[in-house]
Image 1 (cartoon, helix red, strand yellow):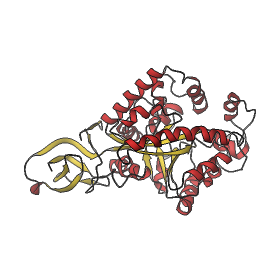
Image 2 (cartoon, helix red, strand yellow):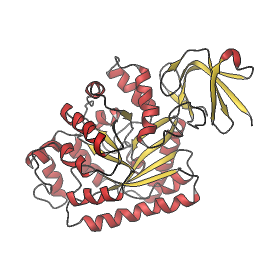
Image 3 (spheres, one colour):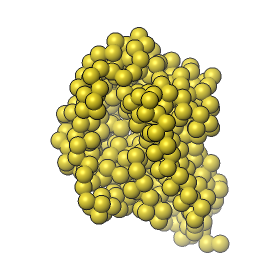
Image 4 (cartoon, one colour):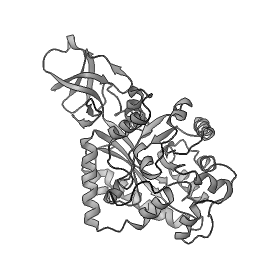
Length: 392
């Protein structure tokens, strides 16, 4: 077995920065052997300027929407944005597939090694099967009413089956696939319950509180979502009025030890964070709050309450969202934006979000997220301006 030895100005091991006197040793296949002192490493050390860290985890993406790059204007707000996504998806299949291929390559080159990817279709399947990235395929269910629940569950289950069938010809754990709800404003109570039954011990993703009107929808049955529902033939909200926030109304549908990723959280209140963390301790395998800073700025021109999440002990992960709502698909770009907006947050903490936290959220911390012996986490080099490229 041949070995390669890497040294940089700093090595971030997934948990903390190591001083410059360390060398990372990996096998030719990328498997971590150990991190040792430079004096014990011998010759043949590859030296780099910058920071070496494990491959990045993109906990939230919509690869199938890559053809919408530069199609939807920024700062429209969530409801107009949703209307555009629904109304502007009619592209030629060859263009959709070409854009998916291009976006996948961009993520790989930017050091992303695993993606939690949302999809309503199997348009990404061909690209993902040959990708070096590993994929959590979140087949996203939409069903506004209980009456349509069985039909919609059947449709999206067929999409899920295409990913499960493909796993037979792939390396173990290249795919992890599950049904997930889109958001509290698109899923009926019966559909939530059906997804819960289908996802015991699985990783589940859900868009959460991107707009303050999500809470109003459940608290009062009113708000800006009503015109959105009109597009689908509803004159009023199809969802129950609970008098509670959207998160407190919907999260309790999940109680089968799922690992839940709540995405965006742009307008999540402190009491909801505490509720979610407390609920997860009793009913879930874990709960993670995914920040997609550039997408939040693109859609609502708002940043999520990151300081509040940190203060309350939320486990934070990072995502890019899609090209319909971002200028690039880069976890390094997400880190740069958060660092620009919130320079008080230590870089070490943000790199934890991008590596070991993300690996835990996707159920992949046994193989990814940190430079620990036996793992194959990939390797990213960050330069002095926090631009990233894959180096192994």
